[in-house]
Length: 279
Image 1 (spheres, rainbow, N blue to C red):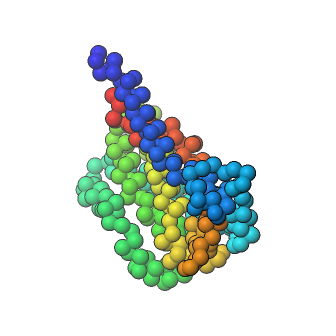
Image 2 (cartoon, rainbow, N blue to C red; image 1 turned 60 degrees about the horizontal axis):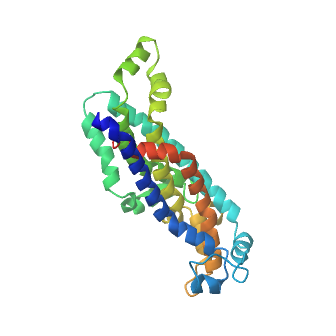
């Protein structure tokens, strides 16, 4: 009775904490947005004030659209992120289902091997990855980035989803088998809808590192036609002079997809994060 009585209060408290952290996390984003509409002098003189009639300026956005091919960079980032995210969620969910559902020799060893990908950064293998891409003829292609980001996101995806897969009722899956459903239909029609909060959580935390990454685009795809938006923004950063208006404008535009994804999956994201914590 006491647990049932306090569960709404705990839920409200959990949502309040998440809302507080969201505001704190979005504060730098808000600062970037408001400064992208200011003159250079106002950026450094009054960084926390809203643009006024004297400080308002669109020079940063004009520079971004005139110099370089910003829409191509945006398109490249969008293609790489969406395709990588789809592959991570598909293959990660299937592998997590297999590890959670079936008991076979080497099951735990396979799970441990996949978990090592979380602890060992993929950037340690940059030289070997570059050599592999050169040998495969994939340098300066979006395919190289998609393959790397898929490999990068799979360990965490499998680790999270396998825990959620184990909570799915065995009676539900056995009932599907009795009705003649194949394992694929059980996976896609019965299991996946029940782990949507976890899928949304993995999607958000997988997308952000891919979208914001500078390391692999700089090494594997630095050509003009394959630049991502993060790499394209480096055009405005020089050794001695930096066009801060253009940099802040480019960053403001690049933040939009992340914010849109967060708004779309926010409810599922909160459910996925708080699952098991609120009873």
